[in-house]
Every structure is written in structure tokens, then in C-alpha cells.
Length: 240
Image 1: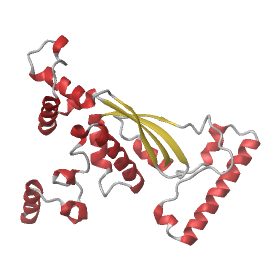
Image 2: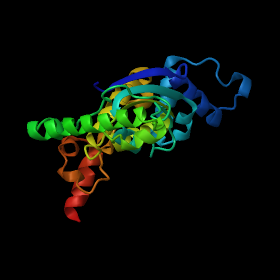
Image 3: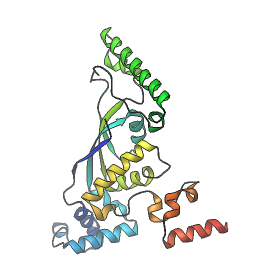
Image 4: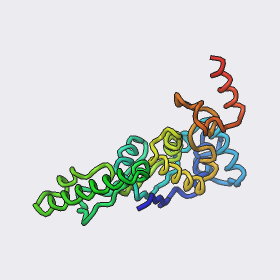
């Protein structure tokens, strides 16, 4: 199964929620009227103000929930390192897999016929052992010890907009592992559609004109960025 990402739900009017939280910091209004009389232009200006100022605690007042399938356990092992997001993953403990378990084959393996065939045969061997173990009375929570990182899974992810910005910064980078990078871009497209003002500058740091990676200046995406911030940084690197 190919990667599939759906936006299951999000906070109603997420940009207004961020703007209202920000207004509470800057407006003399009382709490009963803090969310009244917004125009779309005012919401946009407030979101822009706090976004550009780095006042991103205001982005924590809106939530997004994604459903993800067709990914490997290798991906979800990386994903849960983002501890400001919440997860519920399909259980290998409670769900018995019948027949050949679905798995993800990395493109670098799939592109090499001999290695791909060997990889597929290994997955079949593991699946056969898993089935024999279950038939012998092994509990699924123990039989799953044989299942590989390649085993396919699905997961529900919930995060506020600030946590998502951090996730997109790290995982849309060319240096991110290929599978989680694909997931990150798929989530970013959905987030931008739901709340364009919140995520207009979301992505790897090269989107904003700089790079924290040691090999950043050699990355095609970084070199393609043309703005004053990037130009100043390249000049400084060249002079150092």
C-alpha cells in the first residue's frame, strides 16, 4: 500500500483561534469580547504579526489530527521522537496479521531486482514463521518480535500548529530520511490548505533563507533560495 495521509479534523477556524490568542496579549478588551468583531483582514494581519515576530506560543491554540497509513515501523520509530505531538498506532499486540504481512520496500532496494527479490523472500520467511508461531500458541505480543521495521502500520497523529512547524522544519529537509520526508510533505500540503496563513513559510529552514545542516551550502534546494537573508549568509560563509 502506498503512503496515504488524510486530515481527519482540525480546530474550527484555526487562523482566527491564533489571532484571538494573540489579541489577548495586545488588546485591552476583556475576555468576554476578546473574540468579537474580527474581519478576515484583521485576522490575517494579526497572524502575520505574531508569525513574523516568532511569537509562536499563539500557534499552540489550534490543533490538527492526521490519519496515516502505508508507512513502515521504521518511520514511526522516528516519528515518536517528536514528543510534542500525540500518537495512536495500530497495535501488533492485539491485532493478529493473517497471511503475508504488508511491508514497505525502500526505493533503493526496490530498484535493484536481485536485492528486491531477496528482500521479498525474507519478508515471506518472516511471515511464515510468524504464522507458525501463532498456530503453536505463541501470543501475538510475542510473535510480533519477529516482525521487521519494514512491517507496514497506520497511525493517528495530533499536534498543535507550533509542533507541526517544528516537525516540517526538520523533516522536509533533504537530509531527512526519505520516508518521513514524504510523510512530512504530505502533511504540510494538507495543513497549508486548511490554514494557509499559519503554514505559508513552513518547511525546511532553506525556505526561510538559511540552513543549519553542515552540508547546507551544497544542497540544491538551499542554493536555489534567492533572498537577502540567504545572500548575506552565503557571503558570511565565503568570508569565514
